[in-house]
Image (tube, rainbow, N blue to C red):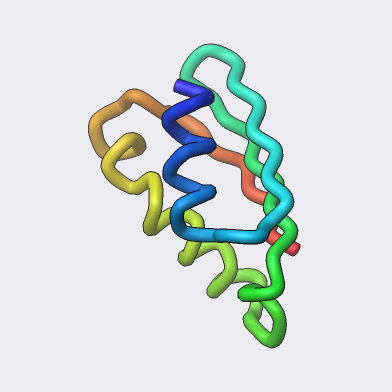
Length: 69
């Protein structure tokens, strides 16, 4: 699961610093990317959720914590 998440995020957020930690069906994601500059925290999270929404909807991920900087 961790490699799948990382792969999706690296495709969407090129040149970003990405950290992914998995604990069961919970994920903690930290992304530092220039693309977030000028966006509200909600818009930043929406961009990240867009990459992983299907994993959440399928139940593969139950809880996700996002720090998008």
